[in-house]
Amino acid sequence: MTTGWKYARPAKERLMTLEAPGKELLFDADKGLVDEISAKFSPGGIAREVLGKSEEQVYQAMEKLGKELMELTIKLADGKYLDRTGEMIERVYRQTGISFPHRPQRYIELSILGLRPADRWNITKSTTKELVLQVTSCSIRKALEDAGTSGLPCKAFCIATFQAAAAKTGDRVQVELTKTLPQDGVCQFCITKV
Image (cartoon, rainbow, N blue to C red; front, top):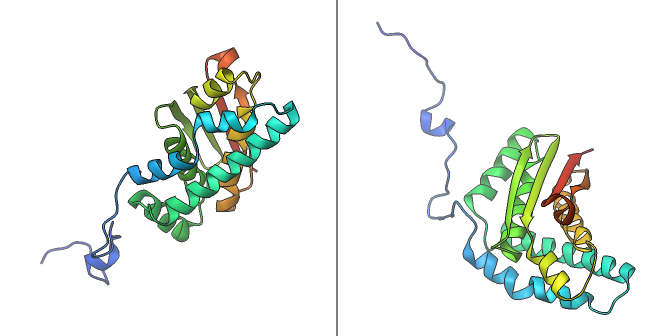
């Protein structure tokens, strides 16, 4: 007589599959997503949007553009360019109820890849309470500087983008810029669940 685990259901019913039969999904961001976002948004185009505006108008325009970028990213990421990562994150959310940080983080990462694929950035902390993103190379900031815009109006763009991602997923967050490229050599955003 052998002993061992017995299961009420066959193994193939207990395991999650990574794909639906006949539906192929990529593991990584589809280049088409990057192409479609880049066709509507560019760092130079964002800089041109704020030329000749007052400081308050620049801030408002950057905030509006950040929200628009995230709306487009979400539409593409959840529709035409849904990948395995997105499918699995949503499946895990439905099973566990845990949304933060993975659901908004996916949208944030895809928006960065879509708008500025050559920029250098890194997620340095990702827990159920806090997400920390560092940007060490920012083409938006460079385009704004080249256009003669001073300060960090791009802060409003990034914060609005991150808040729009969290709003989509229903996560209440606080977003803070704790380090800046000009002063610290890195923009560091702390996104904390509240």
